[in-house]
Length: 123
Image (cartoon, rainbow, N blue to C red; front, side):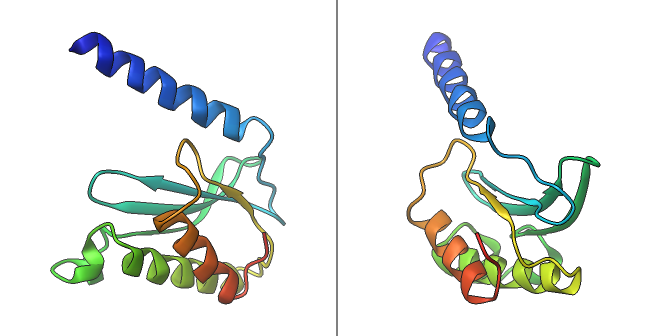
């Protein structure tokens, strides 16, 4: 059983590295990194050049606790995308590089990306 878990983790890490190989965030065009766990979604704007997180949103935030938005779902992904886009606009950022990591671009990730695009981010 342990061998299967190790192999799955290795494959996930390899997919993430392959995806991120060409992606780099700069101060004017940061990387929009999405992380999904079994229960939550986390989204960050990252400036790789200066190694800084410029803005972040998560379903673990206090205002989402005890609500349907406090869990991983398409509705919470939509809200996170909109809120992160608003934070980016506040920082003067209009373009980002989308980093999906080891996750496929469908479902929750697609909903988050569409919401961010509709709120004004370009990628």
